[in-house]
Image (cartoon, rainbow, N blue to C red):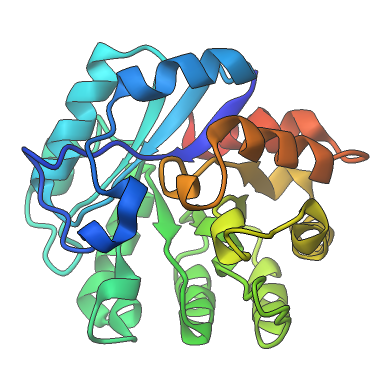
Length: 269
């Protein structure tokens, strides 16, 4: 089974997405299940993990409603107020597979390691939920070390391989930081969002290959999963192209795990 471990929906009429401005062109419109379903069928993706795109309970509610209506959505990674969980974990914990917060949009670059957040992450672990890390700054990966050490029972996944600087051909400090967090067995990573970190107009598969091969070396197929990051990926490639690229980059490894098995196990789909 092929599982898209990272995709989004958003409705500009009913939701609030401060980051989603008209300057983003093709992204500045509503994206719904009807837009994705024919693309899933064309590629052979059977299930997806729907991931939050706004830090609000309204977004979480909307995603859960979509998952209830569409069988192809096998899991939901929603948002909960990690600075003060209150009773929200009791209200949503049984319906979510994981939690995410747009930490890269926080004014405080050390938001993830604030004590209330660390305590809430411990509660997620106790509830059997995972946590997606939107790692954008080098220090975000350093914080993953802190979280992984404090909560070894918490399943963590680094979205988009921590957004390496593919466009500029950058390698460090990304590579060293990724190697450090890969030492923790509870840390996983997603091969996703890479085309948008490359040159949107002129990227090639070979531009992405060193980063994916390095991630395979560090995590192995049992801790890597593939996601489209659709519709964000449309800035650089359509849905079918993203999955063609994944297939090309994963030749010679345990594709069944990376294309589905790891996500099924990690998110407990």
